[in-house]
Length: 259
Image 1: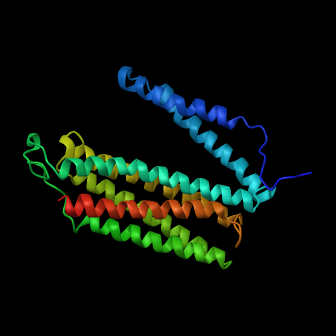
Image 2 (image 1 turned 30 degrees about the vertical axis):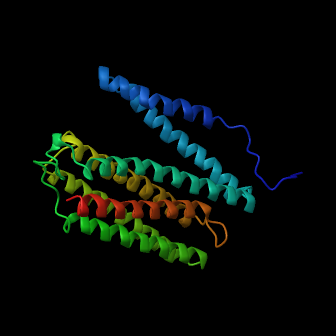
Image 3 (image 1 turned 180 degrees about the vertical axis):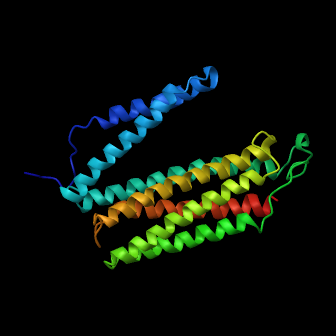
């Protein structure tokens, strides 16, 4: 008989296997860079993806079919997602710090100007502005899906989520085309490194968020979410809004002010 509202998980092999798979990725990357041996890196990536699928499958079973996620568990999951987003804020803060450290007081090695001498920046009000509009529209559509779920309109929520995923993919395609048009590379001094690190990692987060929302769309189609129990969707929506906000800061600081 349960004496606590918290979910006491059963023994699972996924934490151990997952940690080994994740550890094999940086080791495999070093082997690939130094000796051109990609096997361990590929194995780590595939095994990590497999463990993630199996582990999250078990969590969905615990929450949706077994009913183990009580209100206390849901509250803990929400706090965990918030703390994860805070850690992501710190992650991007480092890139902004590097960018402003170099741009507010340009060193003599880069010509004492910003952008550095010889760097031709991207037009502010072309593709970057279109990307901004695309992400803002995706934020509207994911909010539409959120309200539709809370009102029990699941077909409308599926439509809103599908539009969000398509806008995310469109954003990535636009960013890929933008990278092909740049007159500089990641090796072109501090401007190239900070630009591609910040925007590139943001693009990676858009890819992760779009994948997250795709899974939520499938789960919504399978009626895994209800009006009062949709913490998985909430996590994806909060993450997507975080991605939107980061892009606004990137656009204003790098594309607009920094150009």
